[in-house]
Length: 210
Image (tube, rainbow, N blue to C red; front, side):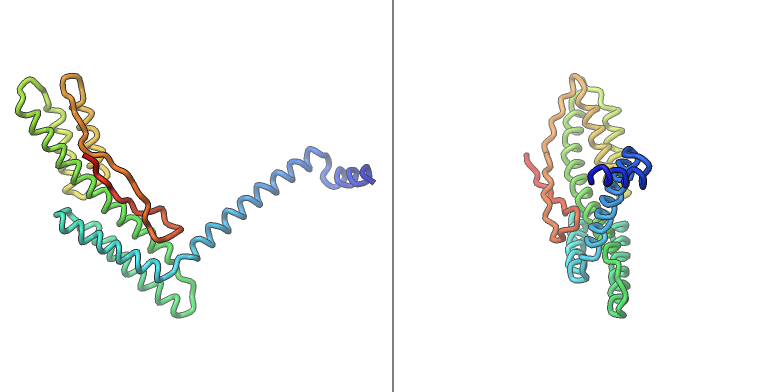
């Protein structure tokens, strides 16, 4: 009986090796199908109420940026796009069509990231400015390159390129950390996910430790 079963398999697939390959291909396809299904279920699980609540949080973060005198024109543009997109998807849902709230969420994620990077860049630049001023008082140190890097970070911050500003801050610290130029970072950052959505990557909250 066993021989007959194996012979049937061998006749159908050509050989045991080919059978194993077919089995591997099937398992790969099955895994891909499972992942694809999970991702689509996750996207469909995003509701209007959830996105609307997250958009309110984004608006609060935008106001916080303004209160801290951080340039916000680019962030405001993204926020307006998110508002318009949310209204459009809500209209589709009211007509019985499938809304794409995931797209709105992506815009909100960008706003959260911009807010986080802007606040980090502002605080880092303030600390770095104090360090640069200290070094300027000592004629024994050559800090021209560090000053140029710092000025570039300030310019990037003003142009709302907050991520680039953070990179330039790090570059400046590297330049003033050369022998004879001890540089001590006064801040460290911890990221705590506190986003309500189970499908979201998370909001970042900075805790500053002196």
